[in-house]
Image 1 (cartoon, rainbow, N blue to C red):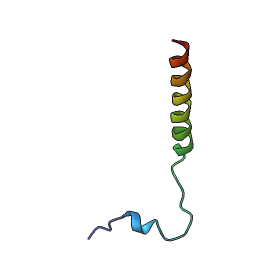
Image 2 (spheres, helix red, strand yellow; image 1 turned 90 degrees about the vertical axis):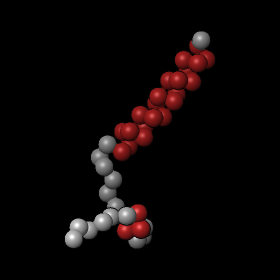
Image 3 (cartoon, rainbow, N blue to C red; image 1 turned 60 degrees about the horizontal axis):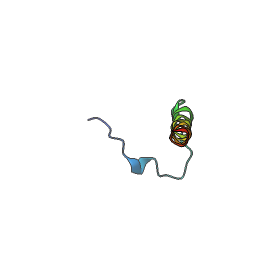
Length: 43
């Protein structure tokens, strides 16, 4: 049998490592939003 992983396994009160690109991707979304606002205001 294969072991299934679900969200309840991560809600155990311990720290879990995230993917190394997670901060970059989240920061990238913020940068895209800021650039979009600037472009919209310059139009």
